[in-house]
Each structure stands twice: as structure tokens, then as C-alpha cells.
Length: 225
Image (cartoon, rainbow, N blue to C red; front, side, top):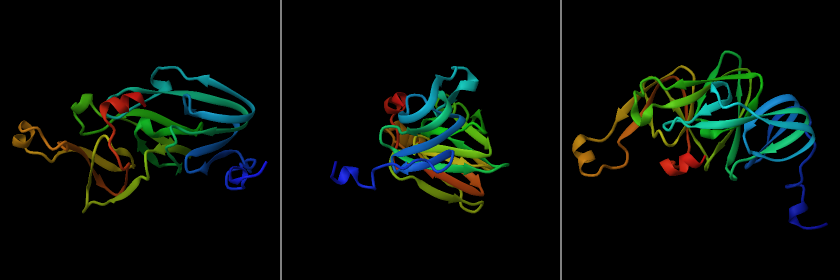
């Protein structure tokens, strides 16, 4: 068989070692040797002896999305082999979390992660009850976390002198030791006149990075993911 489709740019090679890697900008490959976790329904192909099992829907089995508080069902993948994960052709990235570090991430951006990582569902401090409260997932331990993002994400440095205000519908995540609060950038008069659509943002202060996607999710679209 000939043609560009079968060129070396598209044909996958066997995994060199267990673990996570970016196969191409839209897909993550995972060499499984034991157990890992992934977004339910995100597996697009696999080979080897692998078993896929749905995780429970309790606190230990779901990640909560920002703003809506809805859950993201997970599945465990066990066995020996390799699998490819993707979600709606979104861009894929791998974050390596070191021991002692934490990374806060919106559940809708999680694709897969190592079983060695621990995660907890946390209310974003300072968010009050806006939108029902802001819920994100905090990953810690040591291992790899696979993320998806609509478009190319913006990684914005945060410093004590230059806090960053991010739209709650666009934020992907942020590094540890950043303080959070809500910022109102719209006057009451403007809100009464219909508003600008940019009434409240999440403020991040401290030393670290904010990760933002170049689009906002409407409530209807967020509910679908």
C-alpha cells in the first residue's frame, strides 16, 4: 500500500518503554504495564492484553468540573500492552508532576494519568458560591498527567507583582502555591444594561503558571464534555 497516509509520519512505532507519550498533537499513547486511568470512552485503539473497567461514581471515581460541579467518569486500564487516547481531536499535552508538587486542573481537560498520581476534588478557595462554587481536581505525587485542550493553550507566568485574571470558562489549570480569589471587572451599572460578558474572573496570585485555553466553553457545551 502506498500514499502519504502510510508514510512514517503517520505509522506508529512500538512503545519503547511503559508510560505516557504524545503520539501526535491529537493523541496520547500509553504503554501499559500494570494499571493506569483514563477518561471514560477516550480509548481509540489498543493492542495487547488490556482490560477496561469503569470506575465508580463516588468521590474516588470522578473528577468534578469547574463551575458546573459535574463529574467526569473515569476508567481503569489494566494489563500489558499499549493504548491510544484522544478526545474530539483536541490538542494533547503531558504534564510531569514531581514529588512534592501539585497541579490544579479542570476536570474537562483531563485525558489520562498514571496510577501513581493521587488526586482530590477541591473547592477553589475564594470562589464563594459563584456558579454553584468552583470545583477543580488537584493532582499530586509523582507521575504523568495527560491533558486535552481546544486550541493551543496559553501558559501565563504569575508573579507577586503581576497577578493574572482568568475566565472561569477558559482556565485549564494552575501550579501549586497560587492563591485564588474572584475579581469583578464589570460595574453594577454595566451589568444592569446587559453586561459585557466578562463580569467575574478567577484571580491567581503568587509564583507559578496559569494555563488557559484560547476559547470559552458555553454552559451547554461544557455540559456535553
